[in-house]
Image (cartoon, rainbow, N blue to C red):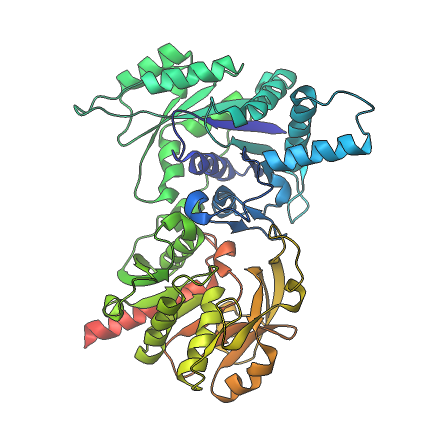
Length: 529
């Protein structure tokens, strides 16, 4: 196993995760089998109970694990399925060590950060690296991203574990890439001091970078690269410029131009292989049309809905359609704001805030013939909206929202749940698709597997009345309704599951493809008129 460790300095939010995923992508384009591990130094067991407005999207893996959004980027860039073991947190590590101590596994030792915590981290990384993929194959290269920045107290045990692994493994089996900020002053001069201080802090932890990736608004000049190489003791060819680009899928191509792939391959004594352009041809495909999609949500932060944003992008590439997103605050939503959009999307979420705005957006889409896609809570609210405005049940609502006629009820197994972390209906479930339905035509099959994250369902007793009134529940999981669509509408589709979590650049999500195609058809029809 070859390991590529990626650390970050100066500040968080530099795009270390995208850099890590891009390194994996350029190796995969050379035919190598790659996997990835994300280390999050927070004390939470997982990301499931964290506020997405603070930490970004909670991504759900096939096994039901709620993880950091960077794992979503890994899956999309590398086209692989990861598991809970690929997300290491301080909470997980300490819980494991404490449980072992309580069982007496340490035979009376005084349990300490070194060696017990660091040993556990190393063992966890090795287990994740050796975990076979869905085809039973083990990766050749494991990417390990250390979250946070060098110098953070909470990151120190993980950096020490990396130092120990680097010391024990042959030099050609590991490479350390340090991602750092290279800012510009008001005169446009690039400043290398932040990088120098960051590398100094890394060295104090006993780690020496093999390569430095400089994040900047403009390409690093040769003089800047020479200064970084000289002061940070790396080869000038190992100083890589990672410039901000319009689309994250351009990053691997930019790193290719900088020679990062060859530098990594040579350092790890991997064979130089021919580069496949298939992935680049997919993600950099030209657009022939443009549509605007309104996302009506309670959070005004794009990272909260990162997978939706990327799934729209994937569907746009598949249909040669550039998708412009109009972010609308559900609490301040006004009908006039969607007058000129080509589609309306209502995403998942929790709680009462912004509910009425989302319901109003769904009504406008349904009555106005505007293509609509609802996800999770969006599915539930589509049922509520139909119940209120078609069946005349004016007090229809979800049990999560408040008093009234509960057309959406809590799942029976969720009623007595003790605790919030990891207790929802999570991960992969099979969904059967009805014959002759729109969703079955989109997927091209009678049965699918999609990822879930919810506690509520359509109230079973209300289903017959909804169906009689025109609702088509075109996807089911046993007795549970999973997909809702309307026949006499250009495109009205809502799913209880989250199709965005399985969308990949070369394998776009079918509901998103159908939605974007419908938006494009609407725009083209209006242009003809």
